[in-house]
Picture 1 (tube, rainbow, N blue to C red):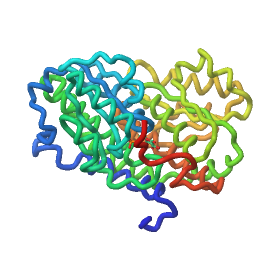
Picture 2 (cartoon, rainbow, N blue to C red; picture 1 turned 90 degrees about the vertical axis):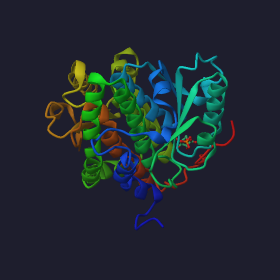
Picture 3 (tube, rainbow, N blue to C red; picture 1 turned 135 degrees about the vertical axis):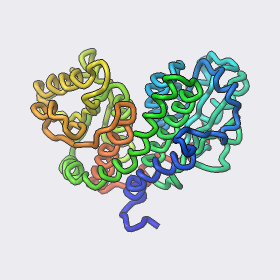
Picture 4 (cartoon, protein in one colour; picture 1 turned 120 degrees about the vertical axis):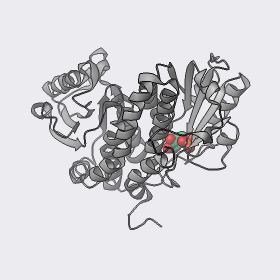
Length: 369
Ligand code: BG6
C-alpha cells in the first residue's frame, strides 16, 4: 500500500508531479484555454466578483497565501486570506460580489466548514477547493474545484498542498481569462509554464540526496528558522510547519523583509536558517534583497541553507549549503521550492525515530471547532 516506500508521506511526496498534473488535466480546451464548466457559476457572476476572501487552516491556509499573490497579480482583484477560525468571529466584510474560496484537503475541517456557512449566510458566492469527493464543505458550497491529488494518508499534508496551490492558480488564471485582453494573454502564457511544472518536480525529486544528508546530521537541532519573500514567504511558513508537525522542533517562518525588524536578534553562531530565494527574474529586485539577507545573517554566524534556482550564482558566496530547484516563473516557484523543505522535515523526523505518518497530538481532519 505504501508502494515500496517506508512511509505514506514519502510516497505522497513522490506523487506530487501527478498531484499537480492531474489537477490541471481536463481543464483546458484544444486551444489551451481554461474551461471550468464544472464550477456551475455563470461567467456573469464571476465577472462581477470584486473581492476574494480565502478561508482555510494549517497548510491549506499557506496555499491560500500563495494564491493571494498570484490571483491579485493576474486579475487585479483584491484577495484576502483569513484563517477560517478567525474569519467567523471578525465580523467579515462580505457582499454578493465577494467570492469566498475555502481550501481543505479533507473537506471536513469544522473551522473551515463553519466559515463557509457563515460566508454563505452573508450572501457571498462560495467555492470549495477540496481533495475529497462527496465531503461536507463542497456540499455546503455553491461550487467546487476539486484537487486531484488522490487520497492523502499521512497526517501532515504534502501532495494536497501542491494540488491546492495548483487549483488556486487555475481559478486565478480562469478569472484573468474572463477579464480578457492582456489579462487573458498573460494567463495563457502562465498556464503553459504551469503545465511544465510536473516534469520539473519529477526532476527535483531525483535530486534531493543532499537535503536528506543535511537532515540526518541535524537530529539534535533545537530550532530552525525559515525566511522567504513574496510567494516564498508562505513557503517558509509551510517549511516551518512541516518541521513542527513531523520532527517536533521549534521552527518559525518569517518574511525576509521582517528580519531586521526583530527576528535577526535570534541569529547566533550555528543557528540553522533556510532561505527560500526568489528567482533572479522576480520583479522589484527581490532576489538581490534576499541575497543581502543571507549575507547579513551569515555575518552573524547563521548556518545558511539556501534554496535557489539552478544557475543562480549570486547566492554562492553566502551559502553554507545550496539546494537547487529548477527554474520557473516567479509566481509558480512554490510548487518547487517547498519540496526540499518537505523532504528535510520527513528525513529529520525519521532520523529522530518518530512516526512520520502519524505525528503526536495531530489528526488528519479536525472535525471539532
Ligand atoms: C490540520 C492537519 O489539522 O488540518 C493539517 O493536521 C491540515 O495537515 C489542516 O493542513 C487543514 O486540513 P484540511 O483537511 O482542511 O485541508
